[in-house]
Structure formats: C-alpha cells, structure tokens
Length: 348
Image (cartoon, rainbow, N blue to C red; front, side):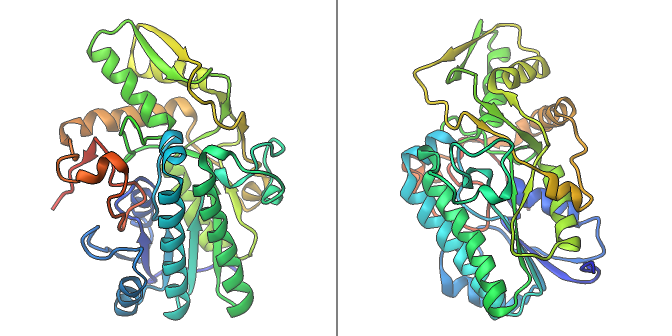
C-alpha cells in the first residue's frame, strides 16, 4: 500500500543545502504542505532541546533528514571528529524527536561511503558492515551507519515507519564549491571554470585519475526520495544511484568539455585516491519502479548552467565565519557545511 503525501505537513531538515533544496523543489510539485524552517538561525540541530522544542511546536507529519556536516575527501580525513560528532548528534536528535512527536514517516538520507572499502562491485545493500571502511572518511561513514541502525531500531522497538536511502556521489544546484571541503564534481567544475577564465594551460586533478565513481544529479535523488516515501516501508536501506560508473579521469574530461577548457589535465599522484571503486547495486530501487533519468552529459550541462547563472550571487564567507579555517562553525539546518568560500546569498 502506498503512502499518500496529499495534505501531509512535510519538514525537510537541511532544506537550505544541495540535497535538501532538491527535495524542496521536488515536493513543491506534490499536493503537500511544506514546513519552511527559516534557515540556520532558527535551530541548532546538534542541540537536543532545541530540536525537540521546534518539532513539538511545528508537528511535521513527514520528515526528510537531509541535514548534516558534509565535505570532500580532504575535509573528512582532516576533521574526522567534527564529522562524526556533528552527524551523530543531528541524526539522533531528529530521529528521536520524530518518534516523540508522532511523525508518520521519516526518510533518512545517508551516503554510499557506509560500505567497506573492498566491498563487492556493484555494492549490494547487504554489504554493510562486512569489512573495514575507507579510512579517509571513516568518521562520516560511521555516523551514517548509526543513522541507518537508529531508524531500524525505532522501527523494531516502536513500530515507526522510518526508512533509509543511500545515495551515490551527487552533484547539482546548491553544491559547495570550497576548494578544500567540496566533493569531486564541485571541485573539478570550479577548477576548470577558473582555468578557462584565466586562460591557464593546465588543470591539476588530485590522485591518479584511475578510481571509478558513480555520479547522480541531485534532482534525480530527490525524485527517488519522493518515490521511496510513497512506495517503501522496510528496515533495509535502499541504494540510489545512476547505475553505472566512470573513472575520475573520464569524469574530468567530461567537465573539461562541458566548461570549454582547452588546456591539459595533470594528475597529482601525491594526493590520495580514496576508495578504488564505488558503484552501487541499484536493483532494489529499480524493482520499486524508479531509475535515474538524466544522463551524465545532460546533468553536467544543467550543473554548469546553474553555476554560471548563480556566479554573480557567490560571495566570500570567511570573514563572517572566522572558524572556517578549522571547520568548527556551528552546523544548523543545512546539508552543506558553513565552511564554504563560495556560498549562495540567502534570499529574503
């Protein structure tokens, strides 16, 4: 039996970030009521009392948990305590408050980094906890695993309809373009764009270029999230991905062509590669009747078009957040960190 979203009051925790923003755009097409949280100034999701008071006051019927501290390989490797601590608190506070306030359905969004470094490829959901994690993002991965297990525990003990989805690597509108904390798509798009503007002869890409990655346009993930809210109710988490992977070198060439950069690509092999391969087995999601619709070339074009149209709104934020240099600024209702050199101006 499907879950009807009609007239339900839905709160997307993290609605000002890339994933949360995509969920908001997708849910605006539904006949539901969206709870707009007012942004970072309203509630610190790491504070249990603030979260419980806010949810008790607003009483959402459906929650999409897209909030958390996120960052690329360098940020995860450098600040594992920050990523583990913040994400554990955010997940625990929201999931527990959802139980206490009688939320009818909750969707927890995790990350494909939950799987072992040497997991079989494509990675099935059953591979969880079958081997050691990738050391460079272990803190973040452990927190996301805890979120999955917390949803399972509340389902088992209290009968809560809490479900989890594990997206692959994402890109799209609202991404974080900080040179130190961004993920691969944003870091490369920014590098190639700046190199094109500066008429540079080369762009340096971290690592060997040989690791294989799967990339999904964030609005496809949002569509998958709505599909799961409607049609899925089980304790096992569900993989969400594009269904194919490419090497980082191939991905860099795609972005190079999309941006129109005419120089060469140089690989800095002194930098870490991370997990050798990370392709999700998405057969369970496909069996539920959903598949990604945007091919990589189209997604990257939409991505770059958004970047260009938003470029005039990008600003430096370091002066406003002195803790940027250590990634210790408070993380509030967002699924992108405050630690962004480039950050979209908030619209009144």
